[in-house]
Structures are given as structure tokens and as C-alpha cells.
Amino acid sequence: MVKITEVTGGSRADRHGVRAGDFLCTVNGREITDVLDYRFFLADTEVRLGLMRDGSPLEIVIHKREYDDIGLDFETPLMDRKHSCENKCIFCFIDQLPAGMRKTLYFKDDDSRLSFLHGNFVTLTNLHDADIQRIMEMHISPINVSVHTTNPELRVKMMHNKRAGLVLEYLPRLAAAGITLCGQIVLCRGINDGAELDRSMRDLFALGDALESVSIVPAGLTRYRQKLFPLEPYTAAEAGRIIDQVDAFAAGCRAACGSRKFFCADELYLTAGRPLPGEEYYEEFAQLENGVGMITSLVSEFNREMAFLDEDIAEFRAAREAAGLPPHRCISVCTGVAAYPTIRSLAARLEAETEGLEIHVYEIINHFFGETITVAGLLTGKDMAEQLAGQPLGEELLIPENTLRADEAMFLDDMTPDQLSATLGVPVTPARNDGSSLVRQMLGIE
Image (tube, rainbow, N blue to C red):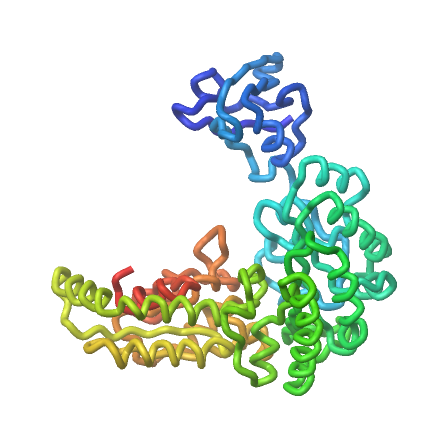
């Protein structure tokens, strides 16, 4: 039984008399426990809602097109509490957070529903046969799985969960049922790399067409690892060997099925000091959110937008004239250590081809989590404020959009962009991780 908090005005539910405050008990006679039940049973063209209103049962029948929504909102998007993580992974990033941050950042979710709805990666360790059966019956796909290793004993040790090895048996069952699987292997130096990585890639490739892609990502290590399992970052030579190992296996995959399946994160190339691959390497860019191909994608999009630069410049000049602004535009952009050389290079190209545009690009070192964390998405407001203080920032500062939480305009350290703006005395604008938008935002026309 789930409380309805809002009924969209003019929706089918509204027209049929459903009210905010009603409780939804069943759809077509099936009990509703969460959003997956709701969406699955709501797909029918005739929907019988079993409601509870003021303690009395009520049934409302709605006719609609298949898959159309009926206009109900609930207390939480899942219509249930999030399922928490039951593991104690040796590389867990949340365990490496400093004390004193807001409580929500310490919550570890491991919820297969969030995998389907939002692309979260899950370990499957808190699922049981009934959950797997439900996934197959409802054809909940794709599922993003944090695999890390296919060695059952090693997976138990890495996750400190006795079920971690057993649930690997779910993967072939899901694959046989036609569930698309995306995998993630977080590499820990000397633990699940080398021969163990070879084994994992072989076992996962054996899942066949159901396996869409697997990202190979080095563990992120902050400076807050006291009393945690001792892990060390990869050296340049080690990162290079991992790339070669994955590429060799992926070449066999491509020859066998037309896809390389296994993709190394950008961080491995940057650590190894190697150039990033071109677009063709990443195929469909299926693992962008895991840091796989983000820089290549950004550069490719930037290049495509540069083909329309004459039009963009004309729009840039017209916009400044219409706003009564001087023809010269000076701005600043900040980013993390990993992306800095790329952003600096792109900004220099745009600056050189646009008369009247001046761009300052600043590299922000992550003092909050430690200098080993180089990705832009984990920068904090305080680090930006301290390192940009006194620098020429121009009329606008562009910051990486992924430094902000998805559900609110706030950095990981609770500072807001407005507070950063007030501290630095310049308007702060989140820049999308999209090369086309970056060109237009640098020009001030988006």
C-alpha cells in the first residue's frame, strides 16, 4: 500500500476521481510494493486501481493507451525505501569519505531497481532467487553489475560478504532470460588484476550477446584510508600493462562477435601517459558514466561544433550587441587535474579562432579528498574557492556540472554555486559535459 501524494491536474487519474492522500493497494488485482510493480502492471490498456480512501476500499477503472502514464506521484520515486549495501568492499569510496559530511553521502545503495531506472551499478549480493525470478518475469533490463571478479572466493574476500561468490550464478540465468548486462570491474593493485582479470574477462565474455560492455576502472583512493585495507595506486607502467592486457583480449572479442566488449577507463590512459583512443574504440560509448570515453566524447563533440563556428561567432557578436555588452568577452573555466590538459587545449583553439574571446583555464587540485583524486566530478567548492581566489576570472566562471549533486545545486562539501560566486565575486555557471555545449557556453550563447 503506497500513499499517493499528488495527482496531475487533467490526467486520466484526475479525471477518474483519484485524489492525493488515497493509498494505492493494487493494480489489476496485483499488490503494488514498489515502482517496478507499478510500471509493469500499469502498461495494460485497462487499469483497475485498488485504492484505500479514509479507511474504505475503492476501485477505479481507467482505459488508456498501452504504456501511457495516468498522472500519479508518490512519496518516494521508488515507492519504497532504497535497498542498502550489505558489503564491505576493500575499495569502497564511501568508506573513504572524511567525517563530518552530510548523512546522505554515507548511505550505500545497492538497489537493482536503481540499476534499471537510473543506471546505478549493483553487486547482486542482496538479491535472492525470488528477486531474480521477478527481474526475468518483468524483463527488467539492462542491469548494471559491479562484478570486480568472477572468482567466487576472491569476490567474497574483496566484498567481505559470504554471498558474493554465490550470486555470480545469477549472471548466466539472467543472460539466458535475455536480460542485458553491463559490467564493471574495479581493479585493485595486486588483487583482481593480472591472471584474475584474464579469468574475469573470459567468464564474462562467455555470457554471450547478453553482455553489452564491461568497464575496467582503477579503484579511487582518497587520503582517508586509515584503518582500511591497504591499497596502492597503479604506476604508469602498470597502467600501461593493464591497457595492453585488456586490448589483447578485446581484440579476440571483436573478431568473435564484432564488439570489443571490454573498455579501459580514461584514468588508466592518463596514468599510463598514453593518448586516449579515438571514437571507434568506444563503439556506443556505453560506459560514459564510469569514466570510459568521457574525454574522447567531449573532444569529438567539440570538434563537430567547431564546424559551425562561423554561425556561433555571429550569434556571439549579435548577443553581446543586443545586451549592450562590449565586444570583448573574458571568462574562466576550472576543471580537475585529469581533464585540465584537454580543456586547456580546447579553450586555446576556440580562443585562437574567435576574435574578442579570452579564456583562462585553471587546474584545481583536490585537497579535500587527496591529490590522487584527479577527476573533475569530485572537486569541492572549498578547493575551487581557495585556488581561484585572486586569479583573473573575467565576467563568468564555468565549473564542471558533474561537481554538483544530481538532485540539488550543491557541491560535495555543501557549498553552493551561489556561495562560490559570492566568495569569488563572479557569476558561476555549471558547464555541461558535452563538447558542443562547451563551445557555446564559452561563447556565452547557451
